[in-house]
Length: 538
Image 1 (cartoon, rainbow, N blue to C red):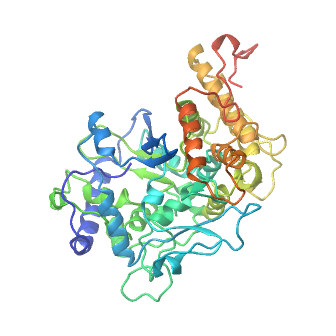
Image 2 (cartoon, one colour):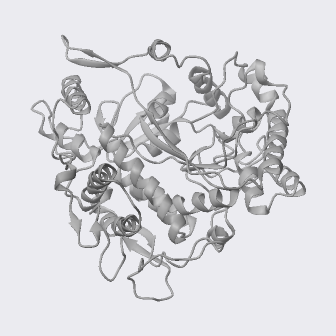
């Protein structure tokens, strides 16, 4: 979740003039938090999930569905209105800073009757110039930031544990993205991707032409390789340092300021890298503040670096500890599915810490995986770089006690290409599998019957999605569109198709209709499998 503020946003010209002020004080606020809380220990695990949804209005007469732009009234009814983000100012300032509209180009799914080349005609010259052949073109932040998502935040016991978890979860981001794929349709067309990530990245890409490398640097400081919504660019733990093989662009002046304040170079370069970005929204009421007691200027930059993982310092004057946020997962149709993905990742964090696991691979390979994860049917068709021997220990402070997590032959290669099925469920002689490792962890814990039953159902969903026995939401949506009597095999999703699809989604979401292609009926505790040594989850 980003910084939530109530107030009057400044104009872009005013915001731009205050950028250096925000940078300076934001860094000082982080230094103050770090120095005050760097030795904080023994915080307990707390975690929460954030689900973002669209509000829709059904027109049952015309058989159309429209976005319902009345979120403020819904939030008021839920008594959540107060502090808020300002999406309109954010949208305008992204365009002003970039110097032109954002350009989102998503490859079209080429069906039997899809025009070749697929070319859309636009009335304005800017769109005509930016739109690519054989792509679905979009030109506004709302096309990306309007997407639904599922995000998880974990409190660690200390800053070192938070940095360790940040690193270890980063290679898992593409895996969970592919496993939760749910976004195949855009602007009334069937696309050739299954996930939202690259669409959002393009929708908030505020880099100028100079920063994107399209023109020589003249007025800008940096050549920036990614949108501010993208994958991470550096690991934070000392064990991960040797896998930092991406060029890390950072503000050298701020980097030196952080080093002089006693912050180690890995964390200093991470923060200095975040701060190559300018603030996008500044509120008039939140400019002058006490850097010892507030962190708004730091959060202004931190919370608009929307990366796959986020390292989160404790907010001032709270009991909240050091945290990490896991951000790649796509939202599902039902609470049960969302809960399954959340619990699976939560259990992974416990296994990582208990067994001192090591998932680290070069970040360049993680980026390749992220591209593969968004491809159509990636969960069944794509292969992903993944570490073979995860029992080597990712945190020198912990002792490895994981039983037989590695079945691979030992050689000089630390990682290889694996399918999602192999990564999640395991393959003899290749990889033990994440679910078998979780089961091994659970066997050594006391878990009451009701909880075991829930975990069994959750892990069964993940296992079957990984193996292909159950469809991803994206695959299910594609099949629904393809089977609709109004579909002309031309990649066009008509209003009627869209209406019928969302009616079905709504019924499934509210439990009015089963969908055996997406998930099994939950097993109750009386049918829970058992073993001689005690109950097992799978």
